[in-house]
Image (cartoon, rainbow, N blue to C red; front, side, top):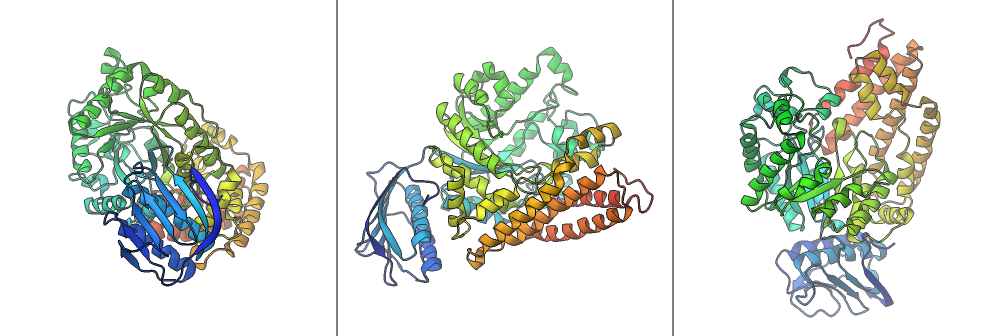
Length: 613
């Protein structure tokens, strides 16, 4: 597999095109923005061959690499022709030329200065190929990191991106909400929006407007809008924050409050889409809005609020988007929403069923299928799960006429998974959204190993995959266990952890790291720093497994508990450095508090104390 995504048509020819120091990159009929893609190409040639090419406009194409506008082609089509005489990219639009450049860059990565002849004709299966990144529940990437994400998405032809925001934007009048956070500013979002636009990525605003509003609705300033009474008095836990804090739609001022947030936020983006989220409204109709729900129904409350926000957007020229996990149950009422609305239909199982997508397709909903990179609640993603999930969701999307794919990267329980560990999952989504034909797991992983990590042995992803399935006492159970105060519930939670698997799992981690270390030697020096991140996190997985085993022993070995506490604290110091290399502080202090609670728990028998849970 020479390319990722795989082009629709590739025909290999005879001979090669040689790139020399006098080979120019020539722009013919292209928009001024094509200079950016020409420089991408120039940079790839320089890194692979050491040659520094010049960029020209409108001159003889003989012996050149040519980027040419081709109005006769459809806007989403590009063609590449490589012969011994020249290499030509023709595109029906500026965006199509950009896509052709990414494909040619991969051919240069494979072959350096001597490019085998070929002919490519290509276009995507889905017009909308998106990535969704949680920047609210623990990790807020730095602006530089966000731009690195944009570069990655551009390389693999992903053309939509959403940042999941609950409270991590510097809203005016929200100082109580963001005072202990490191939120994104208006200037940063506008700068990122411009950066994305130049790379043909639509940065779509996404804002929680119904469920998942913990930080806002637990503040004294805005607690009146929370479904739960006295929400500002309740202590934080990851479990509680994730399961509650729905907007009280029976409050007459709640709708205007949300519209005010949306109005402030939408102005920062050039996109004319807006995702109102509206997922997992667990508390709706149970507390403050219960009298209204009893009078009408929970369905009526939900649909009324979503419809109000969708109409608000349509009136201002926006296309509304929202998550489909609630509405598929109310599919008979879907027709009350504006016809412009897009439903984001998510499901994350490796063998995810088609039912939710099917029932909404049958009532005429316009949909995106939304798989995931399978990173949440974990230190290392479930790589095979992500591949299978993206594959099956693309299959359902194509079968039921969905217009796009939005690959999700959530941050439940503090977003502890290192951002760059999501890359394989992101690329699976890119591969299937562009070319939904069946691809083999090992084949795609070999391509990722070479094209993204520069591993000439094409084995890196084999080791990474082997590393990904060894969390026995995983972060989900670690959080649930330490936050649970009921002894019986603690025991029930821990019964879900099969500690007998821990010795084998930790041995597998060592074997996987050995495989990765071998593949690292085949990578360019500049790309080997992934080893530092993997080594730190793999050590963390081993330590958490050991903690699970120690708890199962009922804290029997006092010295071992104290030693394990020190190991955990020392490891977290290294992990914190990894966090800060790509992210702001965000809510890592909450994760640090969990780590400290475990260290205290491990030492509790030493000092004959009972740690506060």
